[in-house]
Image (cartoon, rainbow, N blue to C red; front, top):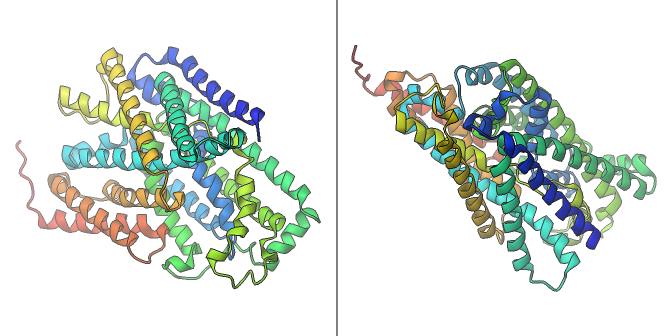
Length: 494
């Protein structure tokens, strides 16, 4: 890996910034900046949804689940739950988001639970997403740093990683700052094509490198039980991994929370002009994600057949610490694919937080109007300027998190899931809870805090991570319902 590889990466980053600059001409209102004026084609939004939930963490981690000793295709069961969750979101949630002019998902909560619950949820979202995106950014920066170190091996490794975090963060800030949500979506469409083509090319190359080709890889997979993808064991323990029930139920709850109540994805639905198109984009993305997971797991199997870690003496009985050599084949896959992965951007993560804070500021400035986001302020340039300053602030915070997390010993996938699990379940419980508005303000706070406590308890237990969201959601529903009965009914004035 040398100058050509580095030139490809730098050229890609420059093109991302240029695309953001191109779309900057259209960013004249906050509605255009945050939702592209609702004029994006549904298929582009669908591709953006797939790209949004498929980070570098996924690209690096999913093949490893099939490659690792004892690994197989059972992770694919999670994608079944994702499809079911998307169906629920399409029926129950998406129609709500097109009633009135919304820029953030949390605007729906004001009349039901009051400004306190809304502010708590919006603040939790900004904090947790900033941490999660910072973790993703440092993983992506690590890939870019590997390219740079191959080009200049004498440079200090830590300094290169920090420089990569800052460089990628600046690119992320610039293209989001200039191009808004419209630039984010079209960049993601291109990224989806690039990394899927890269994965297909990688699979084709691996097949040619395996003696006996695809049939030999399949035989190795069957011998070591790697082609199994359905596991109907009823277990909630971490040691059981992804079973059918964890994938279907846990994946459904997880997807309902991320795709139904998370500003990260809801903002993309609002970029089309009607709910039917948003639902179509979401459902199609679920099918694509299922086959995408199958592709990544297949690459893991091909890497296993190509690297032959099973040839290590006593492979099946060796302790994990003795299997460092086993991971070399996986690292060889990660390393050369840098120029083909989405190393340029962490998906424009800054504009969501900007949308939340700007709507909060505007609401406080003109009084409580939960349904209309910017009835008069949309054309006022001060809100657009504030939005862009908040984009810069959010990007800077993610860079700081990435630098702080660069030496973390916890796996990136586990870190991201842990951060998401603490908030996603309770938020889902708040959205689906049938709490009366008269009692909902206090009951919502009680339910939310109980759900977060339950999610934190699940994380500290032996429960498998796929159940975290379900635990948080159900605890929020139960505690909120009990509080709505116990709390005195709020008196209303005629």
